[in-house]
Amino acid sequence: MRFIAGFAAGIAAAAGAAAWYMSKAGQDFRAQKDLDKRMEEIGSQIEKSIRDIQTSVNQQVKEVRAKADEAVTTARGASEKAASVAKEAAAAEEAAAKEATAEATAETSVG
Image (cartoon, rainbow, N blue to C red; front, side):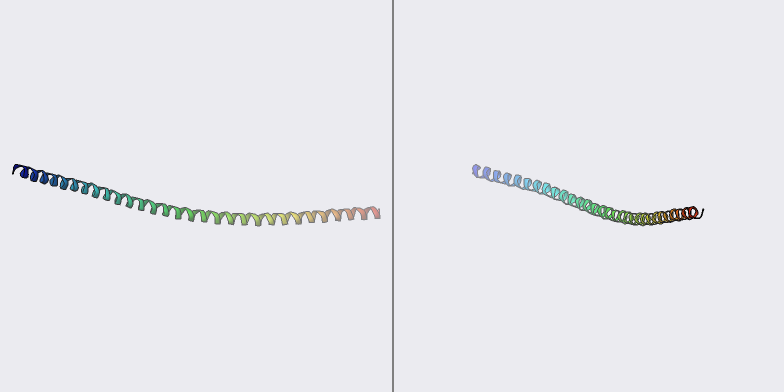
């Protein structure tokens, strides 16, 4: 009879130890699950911040490109205007030189 009582006590102790271990393992599992959930939330916040920053940077790049395109267009217009003015000045100078040559020729012919 002592054997059966000892055997039953051993089974009860083993069952108690197994219950304690499962309880402890469950606590560890819940703690790990909570940590994973918090890490996921932090990851989501970081991703949202990165998307916000990327959107802001893309908008700024778009604005800078628009300003650069406008500056290039303005510079091209000024360059074309300067070339036109230079061409007109060269034509006027050439015309003045021809006129001076014609006057000099006319004076030499008369004199």
